[in-house]
Length: 128
Image (cartoon, rainbow, N blue to C red):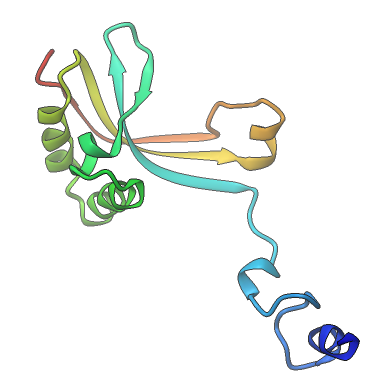
């Protein structure tokens, strides 16, 4: 059993430097900055609210909603997505399709402001 545990660490051809894992995604340093493509509602009071997956992609699956936003950004279709989301939101305000980047280490220190915020599209909600 000890040989099996030590083998990955001693085997020179392995790209995984961890002795307990052969999954490279856990063996390499990750950037402390993470980017998120999201849609938000800026209320009449100026407060930003995250939208739920139903409003974004007409789904209850968060991953599908995120992919809907990501694909719209990638293909240049954020204006169409913004208009579609605006039809789902019955609260006055402005819909924004954005990319935000956070420093993960700073986040856990309480620094919750994004280090970058890019607005790809904005449009009024139908309730506005």
